[in-house]
Image 1 (cartoon, one colour):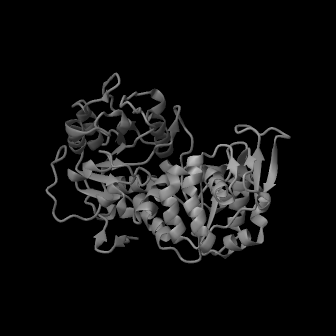
Image 2: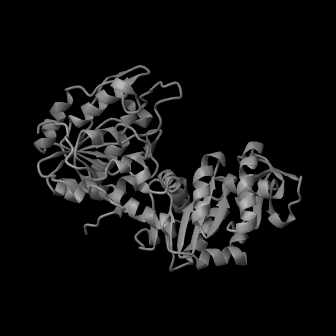
Image 3: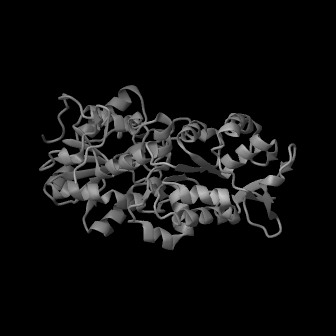
Amino acid sequence: MEQERKTKKQTLSLIQNAPLEGKVVLVRFDHNVVKDGEIKDPYRIDRSLGTLYNIVERGGRPILMTHIGRPKDREGKITCKEGESVRPVVEYLERKLHVKFLVPYFPAEPGQGIKNIDTSINHAIKALRERRAGGIYLPNTRWFSGEQGTGETRERFSLQLAGLADIYVNDAFGSWQPHVSTLDITEHLPSYAGYLMQVEIENLNHVLSPERPFLAVVAGSKYDTKIRPLYEIYRKADRLILGGVIYNTFLAAKYGITVKGVTMEDIEAAKGLAREDSSRKKIIELPFVIESDVPDSRVEGRFRKVAVRDFKKGEGYNYFLDIAAESFADPRVLESLLGAKTIFVNAVMGYTPHFTEGSKALDETIDRNSTARKLYGGGDTLQEFKNLCPGLYLSVLDNARYYFFTGGGTVLTAIEKGSPYGLEPVHALLEKEAPAYASGNGR
Protein backbone atom coordinates (compact mmCIF):
# COMPACT_ATOMS: atom_id res chain seq x y z
CA MET A 1 0.00 0.00 0.00
CA GLU A 2 1.34 3.38 -0.96
CA GLN A 3 2.05 5.60 2.02
CA GLU A 4 3.65 9.01 2.18
CA ARG A 5 6.29 9.53 4.86
CA LYS A 6 6.26 13.19 5.77
CA THR A 7 7.69 15.78 8.05
CA LYS A 8 6.40 19.35 7.88
CA LYS A 9 6.37 20.29 4.20
CA GLN A 10 8.77 17.41 3.48
CA THR A 11 7.84 14.42 1.34
CA LEU A 12 10.11 11.67 0.12
CA SER A 13 10.22 10.79 -3.55
CA LEU A 14 9.03 7.18 -3.45
CA ILE A 15 9.94 4.29 -5.72
CA GLN A 16 6.24 3.51 -6.17
CA ASN A 17 5.94 6.80 -8.06
CA ALA A 18 8.97 6.21 -10.28
CA PRO A 19 8.48 5.42 -14.01
CA LEU A 20 10.48 2.19 -14.19
CA GLU A 21 9.27 0.52 -17.38
CA GLY A 22 12.19 0.03 -19.74
CA LYS A 23 14.56 2.04 -17.52
CA VAL A 24 17.98 1.09 -16.19
CA VAL A 25 17.75 1.59 -12.43
CA LEU A 26 20.83 2.19 -10.29
CA VAL A 27 20.09 0.90 -6.78
CA ARG A 28 22.19 1.55 -3.69
CA PHE A 29 21.72 -1.22 -1.12
CA ASP A 30 23.37 -1.79 2.23
CA HIS A 31 24.71 -5.28 1.63
CA ASN A 32 27.69 -4.69 3.89
CA VAL A 33 27.46 -8.19 5.39
CA VAL A 34 30.72 -9.73 4.17
CA LYS A 35 33.74 -10.30 6.40
CA ASP A 36 36.84 -12.12 5.19
CA GLY A 37 35.03 -13.26 2.08
CA GLU A 38 32.01 -14.77 3.87
CA ILE A 39 28.48 -13.57 4.55
CA LYS A 40 28.04 -13.40 8.30
CA ASP A 41 24.30 -12.73 8.24
CA PRO A 42 22.13 -12.32 5.11
CA TYR A 43 19.42 -10.34 6.95
CA ARG A 44 20.19 -7.04 5.21
CA ILE A 45 20.23 -8.73 1.80
CA ASP A 46 16.92 -10.47 2.42
CA ARG A 47 15.28 -7.24 3.56
CA SER A 48 16.21 -5.57 0.25
CA LEU A 49 14.63 -8.21 -2.00
CA GLY A 50 11.23 -6.51 -2.05
CA THR A 51 12.65 -3.40 -3.69
CA LEU A 52 14.65 -5.46 -6.17
CA TYR A 53 11.60 -7.55 -7.10
CA ASN A 54 9.46 -4.43 -7.52
CA ILE A 55 11.95 -2.89 -9.94
CA VAL A 56 12.05 -5.99 -12.13
CA GLU A 57 8.29 -6.65 -11.92
CA ARG A 58 7.60 -3.12 -13.16
CA GLY A 59 9.95 -3.46 -16.13
CA GLY A 60 13.11 -1.90 -14.71
CA ARG A 61 16.58 -3.32 -15.30
CA PRO A 62 18.67 -3.14 -12.09
CA ILE A 63 22.29 -2.20 -11.48
CA LEU A 64 23.12 -2.92 -7.84
CA MET A 65 25.83 -1.42 -5.66
CA THR A 66 26.96 -1.49 -2.03
CA HIS A 67 30.00 -0.80 0.08
CA ILE A 68 31.73 -3.57 2.01
CA GLY A 69 34.14 -2.98 4.86
CA ARG A 70 36.63 -0.14 5.01
CA PRO A 71 39.14 -0.56 2.18
CA LYS A 72 40.42 3.01 2.70
CA ASP A 73 42.86 3.38 5.59
CA ARG A 74 43.56 6.50 7.66
CA GLU A 75 46.29 7.59 5.26
CA GLY A 76 43.84 7.46 2.36
CA LYS A 77 45.28 4.31 0.80
CA ILE A 78 42.69 2.02 -0.84
CA THR A 79 43.31 -1.72 -0.87
CA CYS A 80 41.02 -3.87 -3.00
CA LYS A 81 41.07 -7.17 -1.10
CA GLU A 82 39.14 -10.21 -2.25
CA GLY A 83 37.75 -10.54 1.29
CA GLU A 84 35.88 -7.27 0.72
CA SER A 85 34.52 -8.20 -2.69
CA VAL A 86 30.80 -8.23 -3.56
CA ARG A 87 31.23 -11.75 -4.95
CA PRO A 88 29.67 -13.56 -1.91
CA VAL A 89 26.63 -11.26 -2.10
CA VAL A 90 26.26 -11.94 -5.83
CA GLU A 91 26.51 -15.70 -5.29
CA TYR A 92 23.90 -15.51 -2.53
CA LEU A 93 21.49 -13.56 -4.75
CA GLU A 94 22.00 -15.94 -7.65
CA ARG A 95 21.19 -18.94 -5.42
CA LYS A 96 18.21 -17.17 -3.88
CA LEU A 97 16.69 -15.70 -7.04
CA HIS A 98 17.89 -18.14 -9.73
CA VAL A 99 19.10 -15.33 -11.98
CA LYS A 100 22.49 -14.34 -13.35
CA PHE A 101 24.28 -11.18 -12.20
CA LEU A 102 27.19 -9.68 -14.09
CA VAL A 103 30.07 -8.19 -12.07
CA PRO A 104 32.16 -5.90 -14.27
CA TYR A 105 35.90 -5.75 -13.79
CA PHE A 106 37.75 -2.43 -13.66
CA PRO A 107 41.52 -2.28 -13.10
CA ALA A 108 42.71 -0.84 -9.79
CA GLU A 109 45.90 1.07 -9.14
CA PRO A 110 47.96 0.18 -6.05
CA GLY A 111 46.87 2.31 -3.12
CA GLN A 112 44.45 4.35 -5.25
CA GLY A 113 41.71 1.86 -5.98
CA ILE A 114 39.59 2.01 -9.13
CA LYS A 115 39.83 5.39 -10.80
CA ASN A 116 37.23 5.02 -13.54
CA ILE A 117 34.20 3.10 -14.73
CA ASP A 118 35.45 2.36 -18.22
CA THR A 119 33.37 1.79 -21.32
CA SER A 120 33.67 -2.00 -21.08
CA ILE A 121 30.59 -1.86 -18.87
CA ASN A 122 28.48 -0.99 -21.92
CA HIS A 123 28.56 -4.66 -22.95
CA ALA A 124 27.08 -5.63 -19.60
CA ILE A 125 24.40 -2.92 -19.84
CA LYS A 126 23.47 -4.19 -23.32
CA ALA A 127 23.11 -7.72 -21.93
CA LEU A 128 21.00 -6.32 -19.07
CA ARG A 129 18.64 -4.49 -21.42
CA GLU A 130 18.31 -7.57 -23.61
CA ARG A 131 17.55 -9.70 -20.53
CA ARG A 132 20.57 -11.93 -21.03
CA ALA A 133 21.43 -11.03 -17.42
CA GLY A 134 19.17 -10.52 -14.44
CA GLY A 135 21.22 -7.63 -13.13
CA ILE A 136 24.61 -5.99 -12.87
CA TYR A 137 26.40 -5.77 -9.53
CA LEU A 138 29.13 -3.12 -9.42
CA PRO A 139 32.34 -3.73 -7.45
CA ASN A 140 32.53 -2.52 -3.84
CA THR A 141 31.78 1.21 -4.07
CA ARG A 142 34.61 1.97 -1.63
CA TRP A 143 37.09 0.43 -4.06
CA PHE A 144 36.49 3.47 -6.28
CA SER A 145 38.76 6.42 -5.51
CA GLY A 146 35.90 8.85 -6.08
CA GLU A 147 33.42 7.33 -3.60
CA GLN A 148 34.97 9.01 -0.56
CA GLY A 149 37.15 11.37 -2.57
CA THR A 150 37.07 15.10 -3.09
CA GLY A 151 37.08 17.60 -5.93
CA GLU A 152 37.43 16.43 -9.50
CA THR A 153 37.90 12.78 -8.52
CA ARG A 154 34.61 12.75 -6.66
CA GLU A 155 32.70 14.61 -9.35
CA ARG A 156 34.04 12.35 -12.10
CA PHE A 157 32.85 9.23 -10.27
CA SER A 158 29.45 10.81 -9.65
CA LEU A 159 28.99 11.56 -13.35
CA GLN A 160 30.23 8.12 -14.38
CA LEU A 161 27.71 6.44 -12.07
CA ALA A 162 24.92 8.65 -13.39
CA GLY A 163 25.86 7.76 -16.95
CA LEU A 164 25.01 4.12 -16.29
CA ALA A 165 21.32 4.54 -15.60
CA ASP A 166 18.07 6.44 -16.04
CA ILE A 167 16.86 6.40 -12.42
CA TYR A 168 18.47 6.13 -8.98
CA VAL A 169 16.94 4.35 -5.98
CA ASN A 170 18.42 4.49 -2.48
CA ASP A 171 17.42 1.55 -0.31
CA ALA A 172 20.49 1.70 1.95
CA PHE A 173 19.18 3.08 5.24
CA GLY A 174 22.21 1.65 7.04
CA SER A 175 24.63 3.63 4.84
CA TRP A 176 24.05 7.13 6.18
CA GLN A 177 27.48 8.53 5.31
CA PRO A 178 27.30 11.20 2.58
CA HIS A 179 29.34 9.49 -0.12
CA VAL A 180 28.97 9.64 -3.91
CA SER A 181 26.81 6.50 -4.17
CA THR A 182 24.43 7.70 -1.44
CA LEU A 183 24.39 11.47 -1.93
CA ASP A 184 26.14 13.06 -4.93
CA ILE A 185 24.40 10.79 -7.42
CA THR A 186 21.03 12.40 -6.54
CA GLU A 187 22.19 15.61 -8.22
CA HIS A 188 22.32 13.86 -11.59
CA LEU A 189 19.45 11.37 -11.73
CA PRO A 190 15.77 11.30 -10.72
CA SER A 191 16.06 9.80 -7.25
CA TYR A 192 13.68 7.78 -5.12
CA ALA A 193 13.50 6.01 -1.75
CA GLY A 194 13.21 2.23 -1.93
CA TYR A 195 10.72 0.22 0.11
CA LEU A 196 13.17 -0.77 2.84
CA MET A 197 14.27 2.85 3.24
CA GLN A 198 10.62 3.85 3.67
CA VAL A 199 9.90 1.17 6.26
CA GLU A 200 13.04 1.98 8.23
CA ILE A 201 12.09 5.68 8.37
CA GLU A 202 8.53 4.81 9.38
CA ASN A 203 9.79 2.72 12.30
CA LEU A 204 12.42 5.30 13.21
CA ASN A 205 9.56 7.73 13.71
CA HIS A 206 8.22 5.39 16.41
CA VAL A 207 11.47 6.05 18.27
CA LEU A 208 11.51 9.79 17.60
CA SER A 209 7.80 10.23 18.49
CA PRO A 210 7.14 7.23 20.73
CA GLU A 211 3.99 6.05 22.43
CA ARG A 212 4.65 6.43 26.15
CA PRO A 213 5.95 5.23 28.50
CA PHE A 214 9.06 5.03 26.34
CA LEU A 215 11.95 2.85 27.55
CA ALA A 216 15.33 2.94 25.81
CA VAL A 217 18.07 0.37 26.35
CA VAL A 218 21.48 1.55 25.18
CA ALA A 219 24.92 -0.01 25.48
CA GLY A 220 28.26 0.30 23.77
CA SER A 221 31.93 -0.57 23.94
CA LYS A 222 33.01 3.08 24.23
CA TYR A 223 31.34 5.94 26.07
CA ASP A 224 32.77 8.85 24.08
CA THR A 225 31.29 7.65 20.76
CA LYS A 226 27.75 7.56 22.20
CA ILE A 227 27.67 10.79 24.26
CA ARG A 228 25.61 12.92 21.87
CA PRO A 229 22.97 10.32 20.88
CA LEU A 230 22.86 9.13 24.51
CA TYR A 231 21.92 12.60 25.74
CA GLU A 232 19.23 12.90 23.06
CA ILE A 233 17.81 9.51 24.05
CA TYR A 234 17.95 10.53 27.73
CA ARG A 235 15.91 13.65 27.01
CA LYS A 236 13.35 11.72 24.96
CA ALA A 237 12.95 8.58 27.07
CA ASP A 238 10.81 8.14 30.17
CA ARG A 239 13.17 5.44 31.42
CA LEU A 240 16.68 4.45 30.33
CA ILE A 241 18.62 1.23 30.91
CA LEU A 242 22.34 1.23 30.18
CA GLY A 243 24.70 -1.67 29.47
CA GLY A 244 28.25 -2.45 28.43
CA VAL A 245 31.04 0.08 28.91
CA ILE A 246 28.47 2.89 28.87
CA TYR A 247 26.91 1.49 32.06
CA ASN A 248 30.32 0.85 33.63
CA THR A 249 31.25 4.47 32.94
CA PHE A 250 28.01 5.77 34.43
CA LEU A 251 28.49 3.67 37.58
CA ALA A 252 32.07 4.91 37.97
CA ALA A 253 30.92 8.52 37.59
CA LYS A 254 27.99 8.16 39.99
CA TYR A 255 29.62 6.16 42.75
CA GLY A 256 33.18 7.47 42.57
CA ILE A 257 34.74 4.10 41.79
CA THR A 258 37.22 3.03 39.13
CA VAL A 259 36.67 0.15 36.73
CA LYS A 260 39.31 -1.40 34.51
CA GLY A 261 38.70 -0.60 30.87
CA VAL A 262 36.99 2.70 31.70
CA THR A 263 39.11 5.80 31.17
CA MET A 264 39.17 8.75 33.56
CA GLU A 265 38.36 10.98 30.60
CA ASP A 266 35.13 9.06 29.97
CA ILE A 267 34.27 9.10 33.67
CA GLU A 268 34.58 12.89 33.70
CA ALA A 269 32.37 13.08 30.61
CA ALA A 270 29.73 10.90 32.29
CA LYS A 271 29.54 12.98 35.47
CA GLY A 272 27.18 15.44 33.79
CA LEU A 273 24.71 12.65 33.03
CA ALA A 274 25.06 11.30 36.58
CA ARG A 275 24.35 14.75 38.05
CA GLU A 276 21.34 15.28 35.81
CA ASP A 277 19.93 11.88 36.67
CA SER A 278 20.33 12.48 40.41
CA SER A 279 17.28 14.73 40.14
CA ARG A 280 15.41 13.37 37.11
CA LYS A 281 15.97 9.68 37.98
CA LYS A 282 15.30 8.30 34.52
CA ILE A 283 18.11 5.73 34.55
CA ILE A 284 17.03 2.35 35.89
CA GLU A 285 20.06 0.78 37.55
CA LEU A 286 20.72 -2.87 36.92
CA PRO A 287 21.63 -4.02 40.44
CA PHE A 288 24.14 -6.81 39.73
CA VAL A 289 27.16 -6.82 37.43
CA ILE A 290 29.67 -9.53 36.61
CA GLU A 291 33.25 -8.58 37.50
CA SER A 292 36.13 -10.48 35.88
CA ASP A 293 39.88 -10.49 36.44
CA VAL A 294 40.54 -11.07 32.73
CA PRO A 295 38.88 -9.17 29.86
CA ASP A 296 38.87 -11.65 27.01
CA SER A 297 37.91 -15.06 28.39
CA ARG A 298 35.58 -16.73 30.88
CA VAL A 299 37.87 -18.41 33.40
CA GLU A 300 36.19 -20.33 36.21
CA GLY A 301 36.97 -18.80 39.58
CA ARG A 302 38.07 -15.50 38.07
CA PHE A 303 34.69 -13.83 37.67
CA ARG A 304 32.01 -13.04 40.22
CA LYS A 305 28.71 -11.25 40.80
CA VAL A 306 28.96 -7.79 42.39
CA ALA A 307 26.06 -5.81 43.86
CA VAL A 308 25.92 -2.13 42.91
CA ARG A 309 24.58 -1.32 46.40
CA ASP A 310 27.92 -2.45 47.86
CA PHE A 311 30.01 0.12 45.94
CA LYS A 312 32.08 2.44 48.11
CA LYS A 313 33.65 5.66 46.90
CA GLY A 314 37.33 5.27 46.03
CA GLU A 315 37.17 1.52 45.46
CA GLY A 316 38.71 -0.01 42.36
CA TYR A 317 37.26 -2.95 40.42
CA ASN A 318 38.39 -5.25 37.67
CA TYR A 319 36.47 -5.49 34.40
CA PHE A 320 32.67 -5.41 34.49
CA LEU A 321 31.90 -7.72 31.58
CA ASP A 322 28.21 -8.50 31.92
CA ILE A 323 24.94 -7.85 33.72
CA ALA A 324 23.84 -10.68 36.01
CA ALA A 325 20.58 -12.21 34.75
CA GLU A 326 18.84 -11.73 38.10
CA SER A 327 19.06 -7.95 37.58
CA PHE A 328 16.08 -8.25 35.24
CA ALA A 329 13.97 -9.76 38.03
CA ASP A 330 14.50 -6.66 40.17
CA PRO A 331 11.05 -5.07 40.75
CA ARG A 332 11.99 -1.60 39.40
CA VAL A 333 13.73 -3.04 36.33
CA LEU A 334 10.88 -5.47 35.68
CA GLU A 335 8.22 -2.77 36.06
CA SER A 336 10.03 -0.54 33.56
CA LEU A 337 10.31 -3.30 30.97
CA LEU A 338 6.79 -4.69 31.36
CA GLY A 339 5.08 -1.32 31.69
CA ALA A 340 6.57 0.37 28.62
CA LYS A 341 4.53 1.02 25.48
CA THR A 342 7.60 1.59 23.29
CA ILE A 343 10.97 -0.13 23.81
CA PHE A 344 14.04 0.76 21.78
CA VAL A 345 17.04 -1.54 22.17
CA ASN A 346 20.50 -0.72 20.86
CA ALA A 347 22.43 -2.80 23.31
CA VAL A 348 24.58 -5.83 23.94
CA MET A 349 24.77 -6.13 27.72
CA GLY A 350 27.99 -8.14 27.99
CA TYR A 351 31.39 -8.69 26.44
CA THR A 352 30.77 -11.28 23.75
CA PRO A 353 31.22 -14.15 23.14
CA HIS A 354 32.01 -15.19 26.72
CA PHE A 355 29.56 -13.07 28.74
CA THR A 356 26.03 -13.19 27.37
CA GLU A 357 23.64 -13.86 30.24
CA GLY A 358 22.62 -10.21 30.52
CA SER A 359 21.63 -9.88 26.86
CA LYS A 360 19.68 -13.15 26.92
CA ALA A 361 17.79 -12.16 30.07
CA LEU A 362 17.03 -8.72 28.61
CA ASP A 363 15.56 -10.11 25.38
CA GLU A 364 13.49 -12.75 27.16
CA THR A 365 12.12 -10.21 29.64
CA ILE A 366 11.20 -7.74 26.90
CA ASP A 367 9.26 -10.48 25.12
CA ARG A 368 7.06 -10.86 28.20
CA ASN A 369 5.66 -7.41 27.39
CA SER A 370 3.07 -8.43 24.80
CA THR A 371 1.66 -4.97 24.10
CA ALA A 372 4.75 -2.78 23.62
CA ARG A 373 6.23 -1.83 20.27
CA LYS A 374 9.77 -3.26 20.36
CA LEU A 375 12.40 -1.80 18.06
CA TYR A 376 15.87 -3.30 17.89
CA GLY A 377 18.93 -1.61 16.41
CA GLY A 378 20.90 -3.48 13.78
CA GLY A 379 24.42 -4.86 13.83
CA ASP A 380 25.62 -6.44 17.06
CA THR A 381 22.25 -6.00 18.79
CA LEU A 382 20.43 -8.07 16.18
CA GLN A 383 23.19 -10.66 15.89
CA GLU A 384 23.25 -11.21 19.65
CA PHE A 385 19.48 -11.60 19.74
CA LYS A 386 19.63 -14.23 16.99
CA ASN A 387 22.53 -16.11 18.59
CA LEU A 388 21.15 -16.20 22.13
CA CYS A 389 17.43 -16.55 21.44
CA PRO A 390 17.14 -18.21 18.02
CA GLY A 391 13.69 -19.66 18.67
CA LEU A 392 12.36 -16.36 19.96
CA TYR A 393 13.90 -14.51 17.02
CA LEU A 394 12.25 -16.77 14.46
CA SER A 395 8.90 -16.54 16.25
CA VAL A 396 8.83 -12.73 16.26
CA LEU A 397 10.48 -12.00 12.91
CA ASP A 398 7.11 -11.24 11.33
CA ASN A 399 5.45 -10.04 14.52
CA ALA A 400 3.99 -6.57 14.00
CA ARG A 401 5.04 -5.56 17.53
CA TYR A 402 8.73 -6.17 16.72
CA TYR A 403 10.99 -4.36 14.28
CA PHE A 404 14.67 -5.00 13.57
CA PHE A 405 16.52 -2.10 11.96
CA THR A 406 19.21 -2.89 9.40
CA GLY A 407 21.43 -0.07 10.65
CA GLY A 408 21.79 0.56 14.38
CA GLY A 409 24.38 3.28 13.89
CA THR A 410 22.07 5.06 11.47
CA VAL A 411 19.29 5.05 14.06
CA LEU A 412 21.57 6.62 16.69
CA THR A 413 22.75 9.26 14.22
CA ALA A 414 19.16 10.13 13.29
CA ILE A 415 18.21 10.34 16.99
CA GLU A 416 21.15 12.69 17.55
CA LYS A 417 19.97 14.88 14.66
CA GLY A 418 16.34 14.67 15.73
CA SER A 419 15.00 13.53 12.35
CA PRO A 420 15.70 11.00 9.58
CA TYR A 421 15.93 14.02 7.29
CA GLY A 422 19.00 15.13 9.21
CA LEU A 423 20.80 12.30 7.39
CA GLU A 424 22.11 13.82 4.16
CA PRO A 425 21.34 10.83 1.88
CA VAL A 426 17.75 10.77 3.16
CA HIS A 427 17.35 14.54 2.85
CA ALA A 428 18.53 14.29 -0.76
CA LEU A 429 15.49 12.10 -1.54
CA LEU A 430 12.97 14.78 -0.66
CA GLU A 431 10.82 15.77 -3.58
CA LYS A 432 12.40 18.48 -5.69
CA GLU A 433 10.82 20.95 -8.07
CA ALA A 434 11.53 20.01 -11.69
CA PRO A 435 15.28 19.38 -11.38
CA ALA A 436 17.38 19.47 -14.53
CA TYR A 437 18.64 15.88 -14.36
CA ALA A 438 21.62 14.78 -16.40
CA SER A 439 21.09 12.28 -19.16
CA GLY A 440 21.92 8.69 -18.35
CA ASN A 441 23.06 5.80 -20.49
CA GLY A 442 20.82 5.01 -23.43
CA ARG A 443 18.07 7.55 -22.77
